[in-house]
Image (cartoon, rainbow, N blue to C red):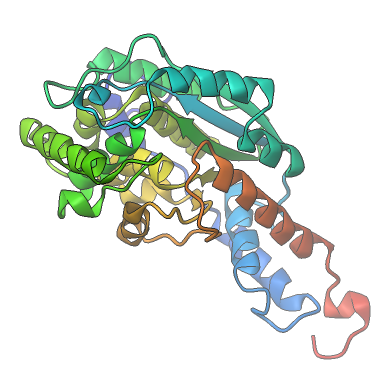
Amino acid sequence: MAHVTFPLTSLSDLGALTRDLPQADAAAQDAARDRQNALTKPPGSLGRLEELAVFMAGWQQQAVPQIDFAQALVFAGNHGICAQGVNPFPQEVTAQMVQNFKAGGAAINQLCHVNDARLSVIDLDLDRPTADFTEGPAMTEAECVAALNAGAAALHPAASVLILGEMGIGNSTVAAALTAAVFGGAVQDWVGRGTGSDDEGVRRKVDAITRGLARHTATPQDGATILTALGGREQAAICGAVLAARQRRVPVILDGFICTASVAPLFALSPATLDHCLIGHLSVEPGHKRLLDAIGKTAVLDFDMRLGEGSGAALALGILRSALACHSGMATFAEAGVAGG
């Protein structure tokens, strides 16, 4: 099988790419575990901080990993499904929030600053929303491939870790549609209030998704078709960034429900595609816990957040930095002259 890399030329490349990806370095993970067990603490006493250090070691292929450059990307897009009245805020808010990000006035700006991540905001044809997926595919193949390539191209070559977020009025409906298509179950179990939908708004979301799923007949394993039929440009860009990061062995921190749902099509193509991804936080959107159970992941934080825009992932970066600081900076029993090592 020929090696596939970016830029992609067709959606058929997507499936081939997910089957040809580097894996974590088991020897580096073993060396990191050995170091953890030699540090001046009872083995396992730092809990998930130890697991995070071993996770990073495997992808950086070194026993003592480090973060030299943390990159944060927020992708923004607009959605045709808003024609079904699923959004309590007008689509103009997407562009207005993008300007707020670029001006430094949003939560993600503050969290990236305090946790030392360089933020870039990438708006994807905001003046040209995707199509209404109750009437046809949300994107053409060419549009989906272009968004995938845009996401991949945004990864900085020097990134040690990648934080991902999104912005797009209507995209909580898109997220619920993607997860329902990939994992099945009752549509209402995937739908939440998003940015503040009332009961009638939630009903409209469920109805729109139900009609969209009935129109598009992709199997749950056909992630590329699901992404094109139901996704948005920012969801496709997130998929592209995740895949490009995997090709370069760069660990990824995904944000909440919408960001995690964006990569559900990749999981459908090959579950191991997300092995290099951490989940920054557990969103209070009801579908997120269900989604994490489906993909076998546990969030780093549970802070009752539901903002999006990468905020939970940026906050989790601070935990990851703390894990690596303990891993690299603590003395071993032998170094400290402490008995018991």
